[in-house]
Amino acid sequence: MKTYNRAASLLGVLLLSGALAACGNESDSASQTQPADTAATDTDNANKDAAGGESSAIEEPATAEPDKAADADKEEGSDAGKSAETSGEDKGGAQAEGDSEKKADDFAAKQKQADASKQGDKGAGADRSKSDKIQVVGGSAEEASAKLAEGYGYSLYVPEGFEFDADSNTLSSKDDAQLYAVIQPLEEGYAIASLRKQGEKELKTYGETSEVKGGDLPELLNFSQLALKAEQDGTTYEYMLWETVDKGYILRIHVPEQSASADPEALLYAALSTIGD
Image 1 (cartoon, one colour):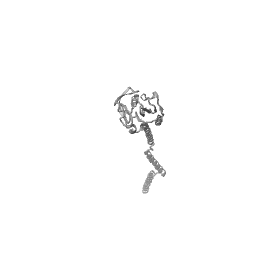
Image 2 (cartoon, rainbow, N blue to C red; image 1 turned 135 degrees about the horizontal axis):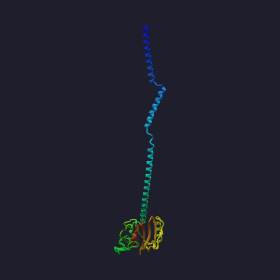
Image 3 (cartoon, helix red, strand yellow; image 1 turned 90 degrees about the vertical axis):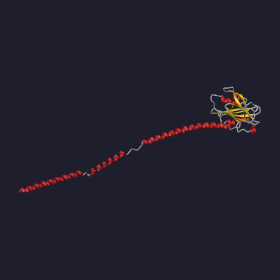
Image 4 (tube, one colour; image 1 turned 120 degrees about the vertical axis):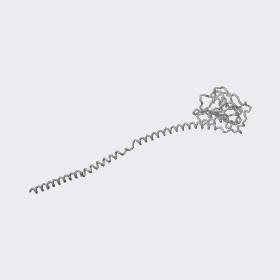
């Protein structure tokens, strides 16, 4: 009887131990295994976290840079516009100056090269002194030293600061090439009416033409029977008839806008008044 009881007790202990061991294994298995829904949720959260991390690592579109670029383009465009405007002004100024010089050249070109066969040979005025004092009106001095210059068929006295080119019949200032006179000897039989029409035709290119008479004439040329002028941009264009005892001369006088001193213009008129055969 005692042997049976001991065996039964040992068996009970063994069974209890086995049961406890089985319960422990099930508990570990349960703790290691999650429901499918929970795992899926965790997976989704993990994916979202990963996606969020990637998004934060990506820079936003560079909106500011294009704006800066646009501003830079505008500034460049503005600068280019200003540059073009300035260039246009410079060009405009240069064009105006070029036009003025071209008109002066056109006015001078009215007289062709000297023609000795019509004008006569050089040597006219051989009986005149090689140098002299000439009368000046309207300048700072009443007279000026001048040297005789011989043209084809005529001669004149040229004061200091001026030069005479016989081949083009041109008297001009050394300091200002735009202050000059072109002398055209006329053939016999000229008519003042025809010369007036010719002068008006030439001068209308430069502006309204008017006839100069009496006290408005340069004092040393006040014997002229025909004097026309036109003005444009401060420049005076004059077409005058100068007559000696035997010949007539057309004087095309170009006077640019002058400074406060009237000496150069006065000297030009003084020299022209000495034209002689």
